[in-house]
Image 1 (cartoon, rainbow, N blue to C red):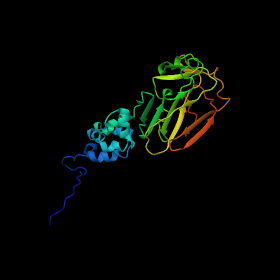
Image 2: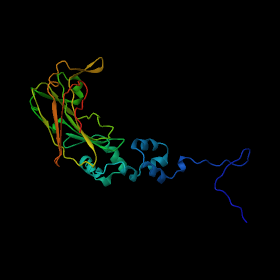
Image 3: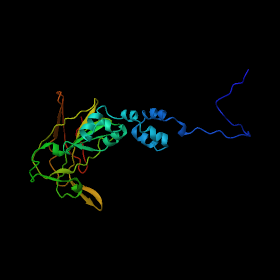
Image 4: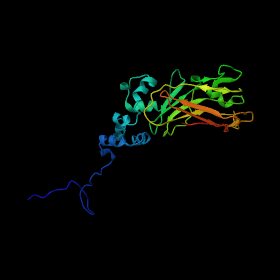
Length: 266
């Protein structure tokens, strides 16, 4: 009877003959790598894509990135990017949506959290109804690049942010072209609406504002709150209502100065 042979080659000590080639990452089929990438986070996929051509090719597979995109990504591509979803690869869609994208005449921004793919939306003060916003006795509108040297006594920028509860970029600062600075006023209200298609899930809503006079000293940014007053005397009331009848409200005193605070969250 014939003898069988093994498919595994090895070399014993002191043996003669050529050394067998050792398997390496280049031998892994691209389809297998793509299947593994489906279970990894986007930052890890991008790092592994630099290993070799096989991993790079696997990182381009549409079915890999479609699992990272939100269920409403086609809506985002059409509304925010202004393109057809079929004209872009899924990886390109993900990369472009991870950058802040303006819509509604530049008054709103939307982006995806790079790690989780969750949606974040920011609303500029220009899309809100603010008491006395056009009266220069109370408010000024300046470039966001000039904000660190602005000479007014009380700076207040309103940004409404909506983000998934598990977004690591939840508090990322948005860069709108202009911001609103409040100089003095006795009372004011801020209101606005956001019509947007969000995937099902849990979200948080917060308001971003800063109290104090920003400036630079010895190359470092500082904030002078000497002439900021009144915010800790009476609480600020925040309210939220949805189109399906849900409502929430909260009150809080604003004490923190110099930093971009985020008072309430829902």
